Length: 112
Length: 114
Image 1 (spheres, rainbow over the protein chains, first blue to last red):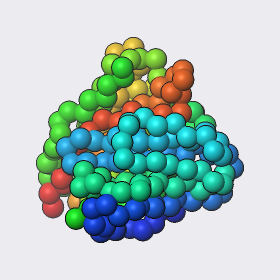
Image 2: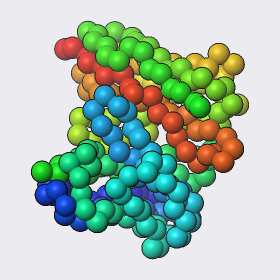
Image 3: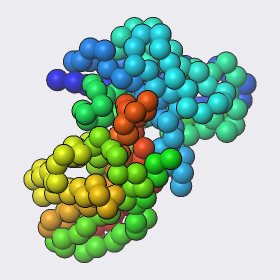
Image 4: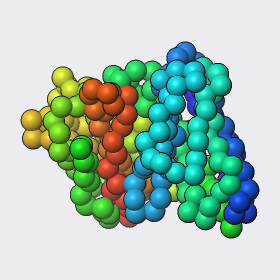
């Protein structure tokens, strides 16, 4: 069966520190991978998506970057966190445009 | 640009009541529409996926309908239970260059009162 793992579940980081959130998928190959951020009252905002290894599309210019070093691994990074980077980050995957999207359990990031 | 709207933003009902959640979208040229449930502090759980060629999908006490021409979908929950309390989100999958992307509504927060 298809599963998605995202970690850590919670993270408290000081302003200016680096960030690395990891997401891995099992039970499927060549998935489309996504990073979303969810802020209170603003809904889900698509940050990055990837249709293959090394292929990253950015939806919103910001302090974050994404990488896909392996087929089923998606990483969200920042070199220097800002207070505004605080939020709930969700990783997701789809097998194709007519398939279901599945989400990880999310990472609550608090930048202090 | 596709916009997805969910009204109401919050809904409170007594246990046992049947209820309907609404989702509307501005561009009817969608591949599919998906309903999710989100518990506080958790990720999204997929409930139902309706393809553009389908009119409805059912899973247990849940029934989702799709009317592409009017840009609307509804999620019907029968005999609501306190465990149904959560935020329900709908999302549409767009064609074209963004065919793998989902556009979400802001959700309806449902509270089922025992």
